[in-house]
Image (cartoon, rainbow, N blue to C red; front, side):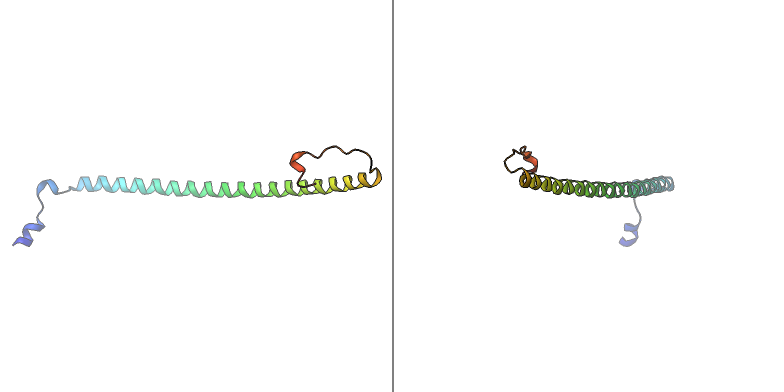
Length: 100
């Protein structure tokens, strides 16, 4: 008898079909929103990855140019010191002192 009494819910605890339908519609809306968010996230990630790849390429090219310039400066300095050892050379900029 107690088992049957426990299975019967009081009127206030019951959820009617309209409320279940409302909650179901809200769940579907939230699921659709989540899917749109996932799609946008995927597009954003793809865009960020492309930007990172472009930045890596730009950085690589800039580094190659910098090291080519440093090498050229070293050759010019050595040539100058060899051919005009008593002539003054301009001071090396502080940012380049560890490279030249």
